[in-house]
Length: 114
Image (cartoon, helix red, strand yellow):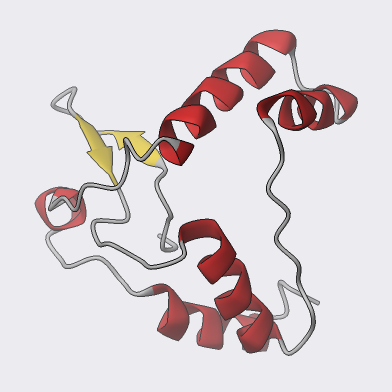
């Protein structure tokens, strides 16, 4: 499982778990900077308004219900509701959450970012 910046997964016991498990300064902008360094190419983070994000999703062919749900989820993230550090990864996977930077350094060799 790749590191995540606030995604959630449903565990068999019906709890909702955050999969990042750790605070990470900068969140999305910091993730993009880390990935750009690892990829060795420029990558730019652009914060979208909720309306612009919804329009992008619809333009990609996403259903309206999905665009609305994703928009609501990211509004909660932006408001800081996913900032709490949890032990979700340890409890679900039996290991500590992985840091993004070491993971990002390994990925270019796989060719998936080519």
